[in-house]
Length: 116
Length: 217
Ligand SMILES: [Zn+2]
Image 1 (tube, rainbow over the protein chains, first blue to last red):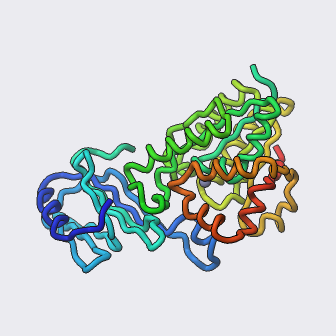
Image 2 (cartoon, each protein chain N blue to C red):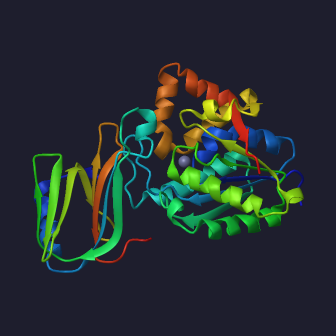
Image 3 (cartoon, rainbow over the protein chains, first blue to last red):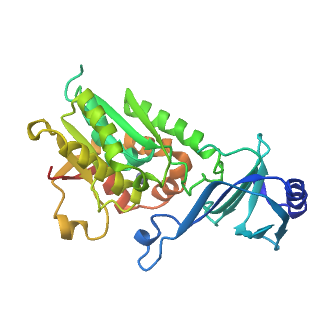
């Protein structure tokens, strides 16, 4: 992965407008968070292979970045994104890494389903 | 059929490195065989290497190879992956999982099973794995049940369960164990840095002594 270049990302998002894409969306502070530090809440969520079609997709911020996708009946939102790549399968992979390189958020968009 | 089969059942590649690597090395050196059932590829791990070398989609393959290497270093010939997804074990049909474990137990007839102590193993996948193992063992006729040695590290473990029943001195395997932990570099690089840069007594203790609670089955 490389550091996000918002102009490049915006161009890629524009390409996916109006066509169904599969989504992996995730945020986590780790299953061990509350074990390592008392009083911390282990919190996280992920959803994999839900399909949506967005009409407008934008990247915002000065880094870390936010991405918002507007669909006809709702929204997708991701915050804290730092790195990205378009992989060999033409999937857009975004990740937010903390200062130790651990993944805190991920957003991935693909024309074909992700492996389960 | 090799003598003294040991069956190790964990959800994540690297679970075997921290808790039981020394015990496995010792067991194999004494002529025993080891079957390791690893349920997932740890594909939802947060650590992506240092510097970052993986992404969510490449992590499964990287961790698959890391586990292959760790198994090779351990001398494990029989590594079985169950194809489940990291973080989802507790939501699957645990009786069906127990019955898959039951098939393996019937096949290799282990003298001892090592897994996590359900309820005291911190990660939900650990607790669910231990739970399904206990179900599988309890489904056997009493005289056929192997010993179940479990790993527990939740806060309050010793208050609730007492001191560990089994303390295994694995100091002879300290360096080999550290290598096995290092084999899981995508997950452990930060930890290894910490061990090498300063004296970490908790980690050092874990490298030389492995602790198990016998589960009442
Ligand atoms: Zn684990």
